[in-house]
Amino acid sequence: MCSSAGGTRSWTVGDRDEATAGGGPVAVKHVRTSIDVDAPAPAVWQLLAEFAHWPAWGPTIRAVDAAADEVAPGVTGRVQTVVGGWLPFEITDVDPGRSWTWRVVGVPATGHAIEPLGGGRSRVEFSVPWPAAPYVVVLRSGLRRLRSVAEQRYGDH
Image: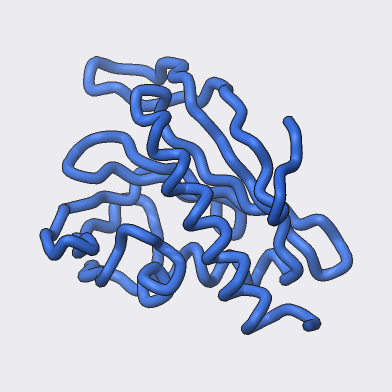
C-alpha cells in the first residue's frame, strides 16, 4: 500500500465475510482505502457512528432519517442523496468503537472502520464490495472530508 498526497492511502483488495440469504457467510472481495487522522479514535468514531454527522463528511449524503441516533445492528432508515432522492438502508454489523457496515436499497454497501494509532491519532478505512470498485473515488473524498471535520473539532491544530 502506497501513500499519496494528502495522506490518503491507496486502495487495496481483500476478503470480508458477507452474510448471504442462503445461509452462512461467503468471502467477498472488497476494495479498501484509508487515511490517518490527527484526532483520537473515540472522537472520530462519533463522527462515523452518529447519523447527525454523516452529511458533514459523506459526499453523497444530504440528510439522514433513521430509527435511532447512531449505528447499531438492525437499525433502519433512509439517506437523502445529493441529487435529492431518498434511499433506504439497514445497518448490518457493528463492532462498537471499531467498525460498521450497511446495506443500501438491500445491497451490501460501504464498510467503515477505525483503528487507534496512539498519540491522539487514528486511521480510518472505508471499503466497498469489488463490483462497486469505482466508488473508491467517492470513498477517498469522504475520508478527506472526515479528516478535515475531525481535525477541526478534535485535533490539536
